[in-house]
Image (cartoon, rainbow, N blue to C red; front, side, top):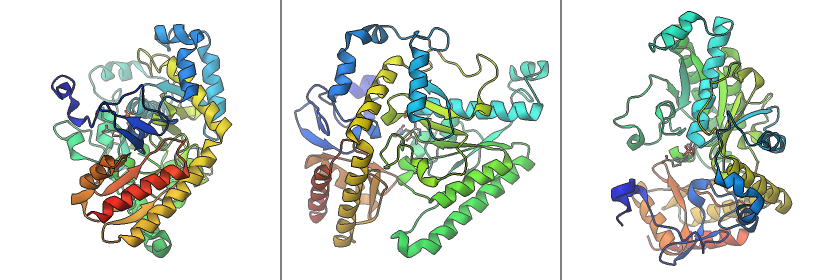
Length: 439
Ligand SMILES: Cc1ncc(COP(=O)(O)O)c(CNc2csc(C(=O)O)c2)c1O
């Protein structure tokens, strides 16, 4: 395929026939139809060619929105403010009411982090930038360019631009050859399964990680690069679908509160229902909202919610040409309408429970091949015992007509659309089992 010579197509698996792909099924350029349980890296909320989304694209009233992309921070379409307000009302995490749209997950994380830095510095300085701040920032020197840091976690993935890449620790090939910020990262819990059997050990591991977070924040403060923000995924997806408990996240938020570090929850991959909650962090029952919640993928547009005190107090601080994309907001509106109308959160919980039960059956039958089945919702994964067969299992399952994802070194991961039903899970499970039988 010549595409890789001109468009860095080394990672292309196959080209999609976008006209004939439908619902949970993707069709490739050769006409092969596959059950898609990976859905464009977990970014298709309603699968392919959903009639409600096609209707948005075909609606002549939307033509002008598609035809000219506005610089939203300067010349928003006149109906855009109301659309954003409606969106915030519809999906804002409990306690958050400020939101900025962005282009993608990375862009959302980058700008959330910048807002955290601005707030940290403004609080430290006691107001707006001084002349010294402004002039020194032009030289990339303090105090205008402060030596703050952001704490992330081993196994994290937050994006591939400079700051987010420095925060990411999932694959070396993402990072090699690129300078990194000297920012710290703490260990993320590594649960032993089954959870019921290892409650004590897993809680001890979470406490170990929390103690390390405290230690790192104290150390960075004492060496003049205080941690202005902590960023974490509800489930470390690219790193290998690593989970932690609500206890861990509630304690992490408490540490952020005590140290005045912003608590940023990166929901780019977990948002919009796949875990059975609209926002994965709802499961944590936090005493107060996170300071930031970033999103993208299944919500079609990138963006982030944030607490009022983190909002920029001056113009032109958080800015880029487009600041989002109105047609994506039209699509988001349609997606949210379908989720509500068809009860897709309940369906995801039902299909997810069915999928998990099937994965647990399979790991009981083939303990020599797979283990650590884990959810929640349809945001499921199972590990192959021998990492050397991970790619082979995934490609054999695909050749039998089911597309799934992999992550980390050993994990098969499932990221189906919200329209995924129990009978689709049966197809996936039967195909996985027959593939394991052939190993
Ligand atoms: C938790 C989390 N945070 C941020 C990002 C970055 O989002 P995008 O910039 O790719 O939209 C992602 C993107 N996920 C992703 C999957 S493969 C990949 C890559 O760059 O290889 C990126 C994410 O999962």
